[in-house]
Image (cartoon, helix red, strand yellow):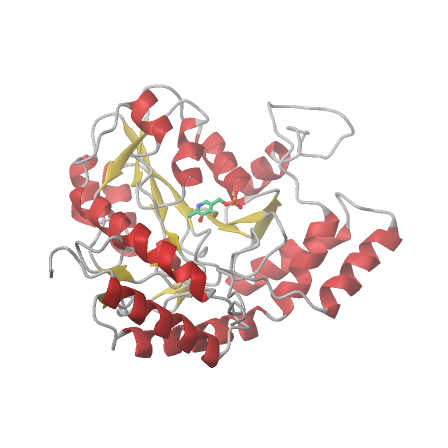
Length: 378
Ligand SMILES: Cc1ncc(COP(=O)(O)O)c(C=O)c1O
């Protein structure tokens, strides 16, 4: 019997339009600091309804620039979520500030506002709001906390491209928000990110710091502050423009695939479908929970011969070796976050996935779970 056709975990949709625009840039001879970057930034600003967008070489770079602009340093604390990709928290650490992790909500997997409030100390200077798995955080409640305590806000919306809260687009809430365009995201530039803001002074600063700290008037080789090379190239922006032109279609395709999964997963013993709450989810990953006691690693191992590639996703940030060794974090600090992180499993998920592929994944999962009975139930 031949091996089943593998179903990848994620797959970008790249077509003729991307090739056409990349070719346009290559033929133009202007590969960086050119018109395609401006076009990409303008399209994003218009889509979100903000005055400014600053394209960056990655989502991480965008987050780092936002914290650099807040001017935080050693002794300052930023309250954030440990249920995120490590770059969230690293962007706080780069400037010497300390991330303080607040517990997350069991359903949304985003920071619980009451836990955020409890984590605030006289050293707290900002909140890093994370919208994980495409579901928006409790933004109004978190903004209210930040205002009451005089804190800055940065929003890591890297996983929530095109997301919204109460009909208002992420990125338009008055604090800078960052999207990421790595190849597994809702849209990609291969590597890249963007910061959205309405604040002209912040925009000018980000433009400067992303471009080696050049002076605001763009003077040639005058560096008025310490900056970075966090520019997005025109080649990457060309991919982004093409992707953005059909982002709505790709998002609709993701929602359709997620709907198939939700229906099937609800019928499988031992799996908890993804939360569907009052806010729309910008579908990024399909990562349901396995019931407590299930040997997730064994499930993942046994899915592979079925051609199904799955991953444990996401590991807690505070339990990463660096955060244990350098920041002294230990298991047991965040029971809800740790329980979620130990049970979520990312299944293959991409816009061009077919209904038959979703069925194949779910059939395999169902069979494997019957073999690997949870210890708790056994
Ligand atoms: C929540 C979150 N924050 C930050 C990032 C960093 O983005 P990038 O990989 O573009 O640097 C990612 C990307 O995977 C992410 O998922």
